[in-house]
Image 1: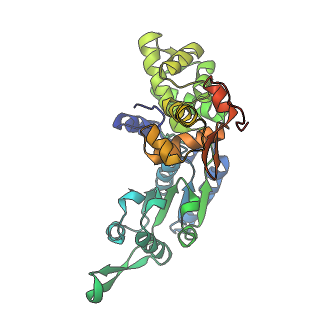
Image 2 (image 1 turned 90 degrees about the vertical axis):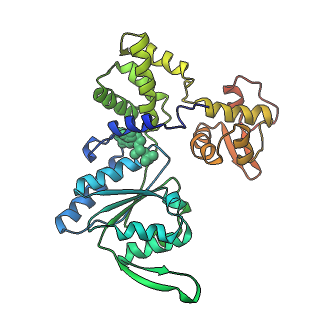
Image 3 (image 1 turned 135 degrees about the vertical axis):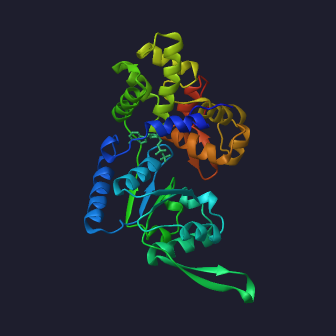
Length: 334
Ligand code: ADP
C-alpha cells in the first residue's frame, strides 16, 4: 500500500533532488558536522591533497546523500555514486575502482550491505590506493595489481555498528547524523517552500514540521502533499488548517505516524495481543519487507515509546494501545 513516509517513486526523487542543499551554508542544522567537514575540506584544498575518507551514519532521510554531494561540490570534484547492494562481488568494486580518477569522490550508499570480499578489497584501496585483482579461479588464478589514483570514499550507512572494524578504521572522518528538532524542520519547510514559490504561514510550516518525525526527507514529502491540497482546495496558501486537513487526508497523524506505522502497531496489538513477536513475523503481517519495517517504522515507534524490543521479540507498550484507542491489557509494559 502507499505509505508516504516509506516509499519513493521517481517523482519523489526528482522533487527531492530539486530541494537538495548544494553547499554547506545551505544545509539546515547539523552545526557540528557542518563545521568539522568545512574545516577538513578547506584544509585538504589548501594542501592540494585529497581529503580523508568520510563515513556518514544515521537513519534514512537525514542528509547523507546530500552531504556526499556537497563534499564533491565543495571540492569541485566529480561524484560517482554506487551502493552496497550493487557491489556483490569483489570484481564489481574492481570495475568501479579502475574507472576512478584522481580526486574523485566515490559515494557508497548502504556501505554495510557490500559483500565481505568486496569490503576487503575496498579497505585495501582506501589505505594503499592499490589493490590486487584476482583473475581466474583455483590453481590458475593470478593477482593483477591495480594502481588507483588518490580519491575519497564517502560511505553512508544506517548502522555504523554493522561495519567490520578494519573497514570502519579506514575512515578518517566519521559523522553520526541525528534527528532534527521541530525548529530545524520548520526552517527546512520554509526553505523548500521558498524554492517551490509556495506561501506557507508560520503555523502551517510548524504543523508540517511537527508531523515530520525528525526527518528532512519526510518534511519535504509532506510539504509536497500539502502543496497539492492547498492548490486544489484552498487557494494556494498553506496555513495551519490547510496543513492539518491535508495531512489527515493523507493519513499522517498528529505524531507523524503514517499508515505503515499504524499497520505495524495494529498488527502487534490486535493480531499478536501486544507481543512479544519477531520482527519478521510482524513484517509478514503487514505485507512489507522486514527491512522496511525495521528501518522506517520500528525506530520511530521505539522513539515514541510505543514499541519495545525485548529478547523474546517486539512488544507494544501501554502508550501504543492508548494511541490506537484500545483498552490496555493487564500486565502491559508502561
Ligand atoms: P539520506 O541520504 O540520509 O537518506 P538525503 O540526503 O537523500 O538523505 O536527504 C533527503 C532529503 O532531505 C533531500 O531532499 C534533502 O534535500 C533533504 N535534507 C536532508 N538534510 C537536510 C538539511 N540538513 N537541510 C536541508 N534539507 C535537507
